[in-house]
Length: 429
Image (cartoon, rainbow, N blue to C red):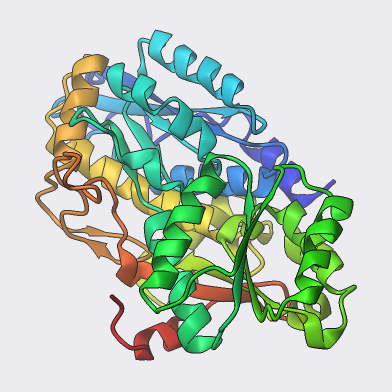
């Protein structure tokens, strides 16, 4: 049995979370205070990108494990249940989960997963129905950018608008790319990246030489056909946006080209959602100079907060591989952990009452004006969000361009974010 399945078995049924003597008798109180139960839904792919879906769940649970149940509502205890749903990359299944959330009298917060199409397609539905939505992974630029001020979606993740600039900066200034080609998935996420990558390259006086679209489930045969067109060009860099399966087939196709006609590959972070490094060994990755965008994080930094998060993760995972450098899909854990810390800070500030619909609105308002700094794994967050309007498109984005970095898998298949290069680089536009 894989360690993912082992962990899944360990956490199955572990929906009710708290800290310390959670939900037990209050010491010396006599009568136990009333318990108010809330439910957080996680709508993520737990089948194709299972590692990323599990990492998001683990980040959420690890942050909740420090919760003092009496710290949210004075005189009452708060219990938080986690309801994990698997949309299996299907947008219509996600819609069913959104409907389930709205019908749930205890549904407080709706967490998204890896994929952007669900959130882009139903963005207006989420906003019109007041679904408080937190996004720890999906990077599509339109997700948090509603056409009206009614915006209930908050993101702490890589944002394509910034990712495009960072990938372009690295391509031109670090990799020295002159002839850049784009290979993007033919879906809303890919189309969003077509705009943002082109805009990013223009900042550095470059323009894409060509743009190729690939189906979401592109196989090796399809990618061979696309790659064959690069043989007659002077392509020195290929920027790819896709998932881990497409990335493996792309590298296989590129390795069939003569070395002197083979472009290097810069990728979006979709390749970190699964077991890609075990499917594409280090020699393959090195042969195409693979680098990919990440948030600027170091999960194993020597700080009390990082030690606390990893200790919680190890406990949740039963001591399995989750608390070591080989943790799969690490940004899912890091982002979900930090986003949950912001959520808890907003819940404490919001003066909740137990009336769920009103409490969602109160948390939304509190998220937009958090009073106190919140310590996370990426940084200390100071007013990460603000009230949204269409002329303030980054109002619901917790991370900015200064938190975008490039990364690579090392020989041991561990994600290594290039924080040193980031610290020494020139100011970005």
